[in-house]
Length: 121
Image (cartoon, rainbow, N blue to C red; front, side, top):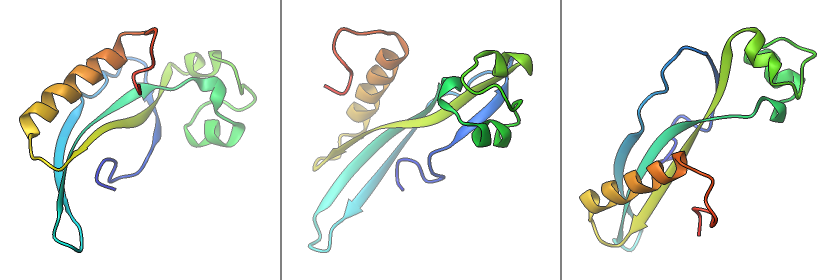
């Protein structure tokens, strides 16, 4: 809930829409014992493959039905499909500026691919 407070979403946008900039946020979680965990997150949108959507999802996104699995479905109405994603760091120390730089680096790496080793490693 701290990383994606509005939940995970899949959205369709006009093809000429600029992708929103990533959003950096911080939060502090306090356990019942009083221990604190510091968190930082960068939230961004990533292009979604239309072929992964079923008929109902295409309909909800306003794309033509009967075109499941076809990249032409989005192109027909000049729409692109995006989903929100988040990269998060949790720590027992509050190094928020360092977290911001690190998450910014990971975000930039995720935008330039493919990589021989998955970013999750």
